[in-house]
Length: 411
Image 1: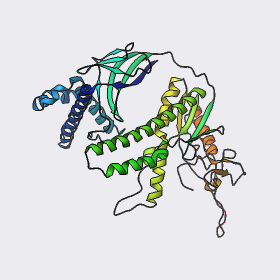
Image 2: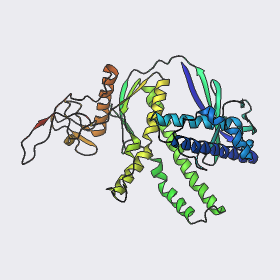
Image 3: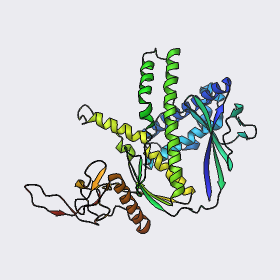
Image 4: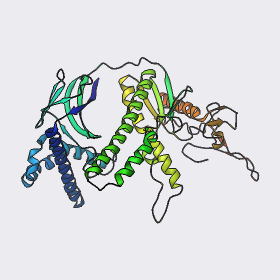
């Protein structure tokens, strides 16, 4: 089994190396934006799509027109054009959105596919046109180094080395399966009744972050005091991101090592966290409440939680199964009755048909696990459509009627 894995280290460059890295990142950003603008104009004119080779042939002309581009490594500029080609292909295959122009500042990066050297015993690394540079050697890399990406985050520079190695096909040591229901009050509720409390790293630092942002807004833009205030805001954002990353890695590692199969909901987090503001012609409703909910959803990191679970389970020989999320917390795991009234409150579940009681999140996790079993055994979508007829409660002026309910419809 071939495994691709990245090892990230913090770099310790001197002043000249930092300036050069910023120049290289700016040159890569310029080439990306120039190529994207050319590609858009070419596409609007109805011409044939320009692949990497066609765009790479433009590089010598751009270097003649802009002499400062010659200072940047040619490999890094070529890798940017490969990234743009991949972005266009992903867009045409409807996997991502339309490619966007890169902005100066956030997530500056460039990549070397070759020409770099790693001296682990002395904790230093050699980069083309940058020379030897020390780094924080927190652990040894495993496998053969294929490429290295230099990026800036939180005012620091990092090197991410992608390696390739052959490993034995993993065999899971655990034999249990579990369903997980993610939420706000409880980050992850397991089908066995246990749960993981949320970290809420953004909520913990929200007031301090707002205070620093107010101070920054009072400073003259791009002045020395403004840059000092911006670094403080940047530091808080870095602390929030690092705390969330550490929490997710520890949680997903524990789950992947203790279970051979994990079933989760197939949630569209991007759609769930969209703004409800609407527009001037059609304004939204409950905008403030929806904004708070969006903030809480994004603070949990549900998508990153699923991404880490997927590759860590694969490394340990387990599998991750995503099932439809409809009515998982309204379906009785005992009798299969589906009704909105089954969930009495946010946390309390009581079946109106058989009287089964439990925590609503635990019930959701149990139904997720049951759907995961159906997917693994029969290859179904896991929703269990048409398995049980549901009854609507009778109103004062209406006789009780029985209706057949399918997943994905509203009661």
